Length: 357
Ligand code: KG4
Ligand code: ZN
Image (cartoon, rainbow, N blue to C red; front, side):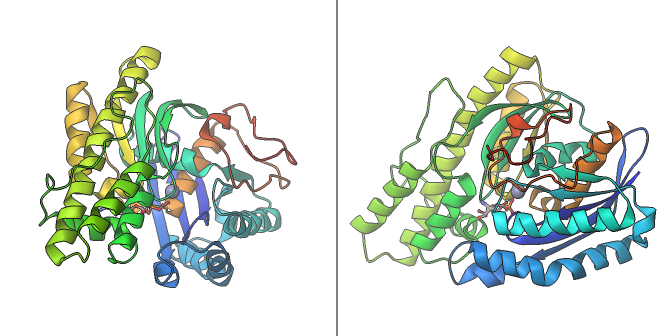
């Protein structure tokens, strides 16, 4: 089957066409992503109203390009999938409404995909990873450890109680005047810094649950920077290296707890799967490799373009759901919040009009 996927939950306007064979193998026929980074850079983060307007202005063109690149017209597709949340509501409305219009006009099924479910299932598109596996999702908006047991069968083992990891990188970069998005900039500075110079906390370390907390780390970094102000270029490098080391230690500790919970509840994972922009960080990848090795499993990290927000993951999640006969009505609502644990495989979507969870 061939599915068109649309992603507009944050600051990427994206559309893709993906084919799923009856045997469950995936093939990306096209994958177009337009990043709005330039529009948001001056503000040091994503501005929801600017994002929504940019989606409106560009989505038609991006979908047209995705269809052209796949060499297909709408009658040839078997369904239209859109991210229906969680995310910035203005953008979600743009993508979901557009998908509904295409589905309605072409008489195709609509699949209202949970954005987190799409991240969770990407490893099946890229690597054919079998259930159950342990997902570590770390982006600018999300930090979660999830047991992925089947389509619509997700158990959240841990989450952040405050900032997401990517958000902490972005705030650190902003504090140090490095620019946006902060992750790659902080990583580049950290490469020439001393990770042991500043004694930063490792929040939640040793706790039996698998939750994260990052806001205290960010505050501690600000206090260290204020203590030595004005800061030199080498101070910036050392602050970045110390911050990154603290994040790496936190990820190792929290994931160790998450993998323990996983094995207690679901047995051995077939893989540790990383997703989200933060998975691009070399130091974090290294520790993920070590953790996977420790528990006798493999690390699966989809290529960067499929780890960050994209339309192919939405199309693929739509295909996986449609293959089970799961479709959604044209009344399906957009959700600002939509926990992965609310997604099921029995068509049990939050009912229209229900308060988004
Ligand atoms: O998945 P993503 O592209 O978008 C969403 O947030 O949904 O993730 C972007 C986040 C940003 O916060 C960015 O700073 C972070 O991922 N990031 C990184 C790196 N590359 C991107 N964080 C740490 N190290 C990196 N190399
Ligand atoms: Zn995402």
